Length: 311
Image (tube, rainbow, N blue to C red; front, side, top):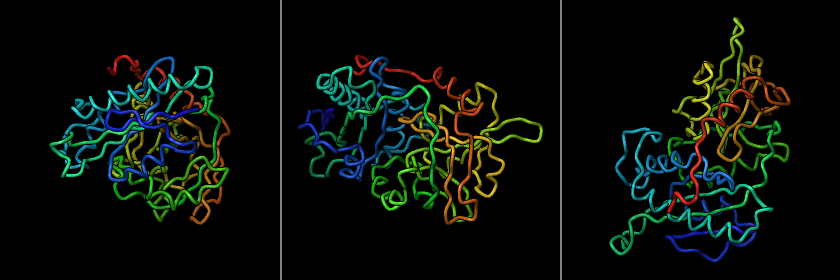
């Protein structure tokens, strides 16, 4: 299947086979980015939140920082340019790929600041969009194994493209059996994954279930993370904002990772070689009760933006 690349509003020569979203980020490490899903039947998933998060991250490129949270801020002129470029990329992607071959595409948007000599000749910010085919998503995501390796990132509040380079040494630890690598402190408090947020479920002595995840001080607050927290509120499930401690893994009843591409994916094993914890934490091999409830509520909370709304 063919990808589609748009740079500064213009379609580019189709990327070579093997050119992945991570390659785009490595080529533009000075930029900020977001990665969304385009569903062929319904449109872009939670697109308004992606636009607002880009706006929220613009201070990383020198723009004034908004005091608003990205879920409430208003889209900027950059967001309008992002919409136009995304529309061009997706229309080209649809034209070049037959419907029977795909049902979802990953839309990676990178915004970089132009060289000072170009400002005044062209807009201050450059927008690059890659539409990339995704495998067909199964109705029930299988549970996966994850590893634990590496320390929390330096600047988790901004989704900057340089993270694609910084995480490469940690990715080398990832084996074929691992779907993700989690970051932790030296004492075993898990913050987040390389490209996911991490959650556990615990049960109190009163038999009340609670969802636990690290605070925003230590993680990139992903869009799926925000949706999961909204789902918890809607379902009346308590949330504990504290990094899950590997040393207390005996109290975990469920675990899952989230991002916009994976959705909510259950974790059946946490491999912790080299840490002061069990070498492999075993969890249920399928969705637990809380994970199942959150998945059901998530489908009600997510919004869809049809392609024609981008023009």
